[in-house]
Every structure is written in C-alpha cells, then in structure tokens.
Length: 277
Image 1 (cartoon, rainbow, N blue to C red):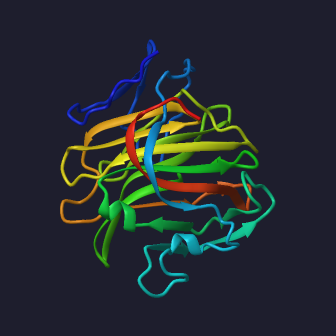
Image 2: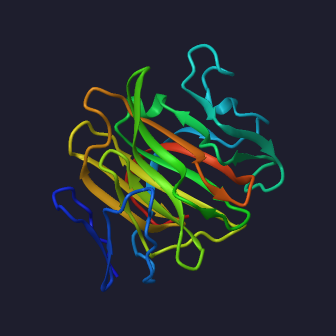
C-alpha cells in the first residue's frame, strides 16, 4: 500500500491507497464515504525535538490553554471560545492519564461550537507537531460536518478564517472516521485506512507547515498510521498569522447532547519521523 503525497496542481486530486483511489474534491457539506478498505500504512509519527506546550487538565480547569496568563484576560497565548449551545467541563468520567480530562459538549441546532485555541506557538514557529487524544464514547450521526480540530489564519480582529479542518464523518454503515477539509478551496480529503473506534482513546498527530504561499504542508496520523500527506498548499494568509485549536463544532449531530473527551494535548518542534511509541 502507498499513500501518495497530494499536491495542489491537479484540477481533480486523488490519494492513492493500494490499488484504490480515494477521490477528493467533495464539498464539506456533503462528504461522501470511502468504501474500500486497505492495509495500514508503514509511515510513522514525527518525533518532537522538544515539547513547547502541553495541556493535561490536571490543574482542574482549562488554564493551561491561556498560559502564561490564567483566565480570559491579560496577555493570553490561547483560550476558549464557544458559540451556540456549547460548553466544556473538566471530568473524571474517562481519563487517559492522571485524574482529569476535558469533556466537550454541544447541542444542535443551532450551529454550536466549543473551541480551544493556541496561537503563541504557531505564530512563532513555522513547522510544528500537534497531538491530541480523543475518546468518542458512542457512535454519532453527522448531518453535514463535525469539526474537531483546525488551523486558522488571522489578519485582524474582523478577519479570521479556517484553512485546514479535521472533521468526523460517517461511512455507509454508520461507522465514524476522520477526514480533512480544505476550507479555503472547499475540498475534502477522504481516507479508507482507519475508522474511529468508539469508547477508545484515539491519538491524532499532525505536522503542519504554516506558509503564506504554496510551500505549506499538512501530514496527519491516527494511532501511528499515516492518513494524509497534503503538500504544496497555502496554509495561512500571506498577511495573516497561524493558529491551531481543537473543538466540537457542528450544525447537526444525533443523538444529543453530543460530547466526547480529550486528554494529553501537546505542541512540539518537529524532527524526522520515527516509530510510534
């Protein structure tokens, strides 16, 4: 099996998965499931030269997202931003390490979202590795989109937009899976390599090269298995910054409330790839 590097100079793109081709270009609002199942990739996770920031929620709150300032005032380096009927809470219901994790909750409709962002590290280092552990306690049915991770670019307080989004969708049999959505070009990248196993901790690692021209790149792994390698793309505005965040953002999910857990979130410098640990 091979997963081809996806470059941005073809009018219709395809990711080669063994003898199957997963065609891209579908709109986010109508993601088509991929039916062909293929073997796991032999590609490995990126190593981190150093961890620049982490959030394990052992403080009993979300203050690690604001570090170096606690709370939503002052010179914060990140924070939580919610809309619609959405909230987060610290919990011991499902924990990967330590005593606590974060539970992200939404009701839809209306369009609702829990969003936790970091902008300090992405603004200062072009190429970073981002990691988060997810636990989806049950199967959900997504009507159009469910944004659980994204990179944005901010020009000013009134002009901030997504570039690449990690969404959850459903296959034909209802199984959940991750796919990537390029918001700027309205293009979806699907995969048949991995599904989301319910009530199990799932690791997502991504290496994101933030570039104001076509030299950007997104490489993403699930549980050590390469899902996407999208190269030669613009990953921020030429006159904007780079921001990264996790969240739960949708306009239609069932059943309600829709919630999942996250733990052990991290940002690090990137090096060569290595075997997953």
